[in-house]
Amino acid sequence: MTIKREMLGILKTAKLNLERTAHRLNLEDEMLNRLLEPKEKIELTLNPTLSSGRHMQVKAFIVRHRDSLGPAKGGIRMSSSVTMDDVQGLAMEMTWKTALIGVPFGGGKSGICVDPAGLTADDKEIIIRSFTRGAMRHIGPEIYIPAPDMGTNEKDMGHIRDCLAYSWGKSITSGCYVTGKPVILGGILGRKGATGRGVAHTVAASCEKLGLDIKKTRITVQGFGNVGSVAALALWEFGAKIIAVSDITGGIMSEQGIDIKNLSSYVGHAKRIKGYPDAQACTNEDLLTCDCDILVPAATQSVITAQIADRIKAGIIAEGANSPTEPQADEILEEKEKFVIPDILCNAGGVFVSYLEYTQETQREQMTLEQVNDRLHNQMLEKFDEVYNYSKQRNLTMRQAAMDLAVSRVVEATNALGALP
Ligand code: NAD
Image (tube, rainbow, N blue to C red):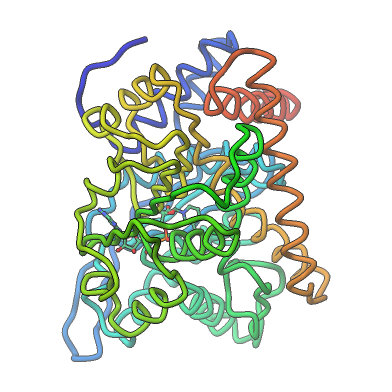
């Protein structure tokens, strides 16, 4: 199936990936049609009163894609450009990710349509609380359990937990209603860095399979938020040379390698990469297409278009972000025999540790950081090997193998539940 050279965005990309998978798996149309559509889509109109007294109107979306394997799991994206279609596509991806990484969850996602960078801390809290009040009926340990995603963080998850408990006149929620909370509020040690560390584990595993010494690799990382900054730091600590890093303001590049600890402290103060003194400035396009061994897109969706894919020099592409590669670009990367670690595997460390947080909260027992990191490491390697071996046995790309494994599991669970409503 070849497609026209146009940007498809998250939902169309997710649907196309599913259709291609259904074709390989010989899925019946009835099942494919069921999986293409979400079980539930909710649109909220929030009317928060900001700290200045100004009223604001904010759209928010919640999608539960499938829950055959368990309650829907997926983060809350806060961005002025997030759409219902994005949230629907991301929720579908979560269904495959949770199935692939082996946790008893389905797929869900939320979006709040406002730019967090333009809000004061107080106003962001007001909007998060307004969202929680509006979304309350759709959130729960057996329904949908949100977590951080682009634009939201553990502080926001703490406000969600408080808003839920407060509304019920209780001091805590009984059961896990939200993951990625501050540790002091029942969060788990290591959740904040779990996605980025998981990305680094899959990169290390790829190097091993492809016979590369990670210490001799030159890596570029797009995005220096929750995922990108932790992945860059972990890879730098593994001994790799990080030669370029970027954020939404632009990037920096240095053939000598960037000291990621120094860069992290710089960004901690400056709140952006631009202006970092020990490297040359570059654009995001330069970063994606420069001469390097490994590219980690860890910022946002659809950044690897067909035009960019034609010019990518990295041999390994580790999808830290969700849906960073457009389908046409994916075909080009396949032709060029690039080794792509697909998002549903590469960035699944976060949802895996969210699952540990969920079980920890039920048992009221705190896991140590070492226990969390060991379980994360083992799970990422086990699932990486499973996908890698499956791809080799059937001559598939890593994305095709990951999708075939994940969709098969969801289909099996859907069939096992039975046909009656
Ligand atoms: P974040 O908001 O913490 O950071 C995003 C980073 O990307 C920032 O540095 C931002 O400046 C940069 N960025 C945004 N748009 C960009 C653009 N157009 N070009 C270049 N840089 C840009 O977000 P995050 O939590 O790190 O999430 C990043 C990606 O990883 C998203 O696709 C998200 O869905 C995915 N993801 C996140 C998690 C998680 O646990 N946070 C889990 C799985 C997947």
